[in-house]
Image (cartoon, rainbow, N blue to C red; front, side, top):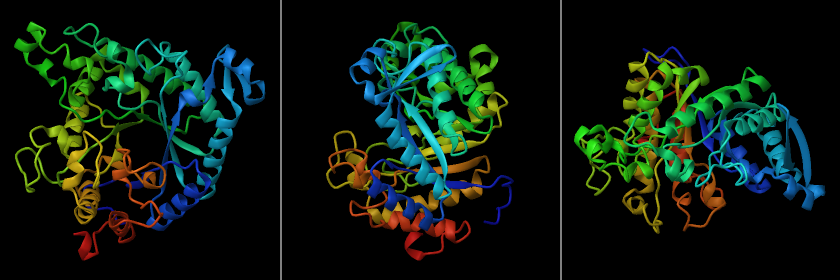
Length: 402
């Protein structure tokens, strides 16, 4: 692809999928290759791999031990064998692999959440994973959406509110330091992604000094912390220490029921809801870039999850998906790629959420609506338009995609 004016770094494209089912994996790999994309993202649920020594003793035939940094860890043989197959097949297809690590085992998790009580436990796990897949794994995103209580733990988000910085942010810095050291000790060449925050305005009330002083925001920040606020607070801890522990900044822009060029001040669709806050729009990533630059950080940005849902029977909370048609989504995705490629030279990887979950989960699962392959494995128009952009050298060539 010929680089447009202002872009000095090449841009890469990928899909997040689930590649554990062999038949689904084969079709997924084939689809990625047909699209011209180069990356595949697979989530690794830590709690499925590591078990306590007590659990190991109950099923010794499905357990192996590894000593890491002086600690003995017990892992499930069968679970790693499934991941072995995924990594082997994705690597054989010459795809770059991004692994997203989530959800600590209960016996290692802090009370009331999924994040580990001891961040060095995550260091050990990513060390084992990167060592095992050296030469195959290209990047690691060692957590996910840590500004959500469901991913981090409500009691750990901001227990010292309204004081700043939030203890949850301080704890996350410690987690990233441990994860970064673990990845790099196993393979210096592996890219460490600062895990993407979920776009949300919940908790933004803390920025209002009157609300903050009255304690009126405390209940909100137990649920979530506004992503722009969280990133800003993270950079403030220890004079920007976080910059030492990642190579690229992950973001999760979300379009909801809005085209990629819309903003709260510019609405071009008649859909209702998800209109009044910047977090409801794709261009939220530009505000996160402003936070980066505020602290002198010019590292590249990756979209490790981006997409729109189209669903006739959406689950609660995703009703907006009925306002997106497949024809609209196809245009949105094509325009997203065009926008980022031409206007955001600091974005160097766009990973679309998602490739193949329609083949894996029922229509009643919220992940279904985001899928770009149908349940039978056939490509949606959105998939075709994304492929058109890459194969056309960074242009939207098909009229149906414009």
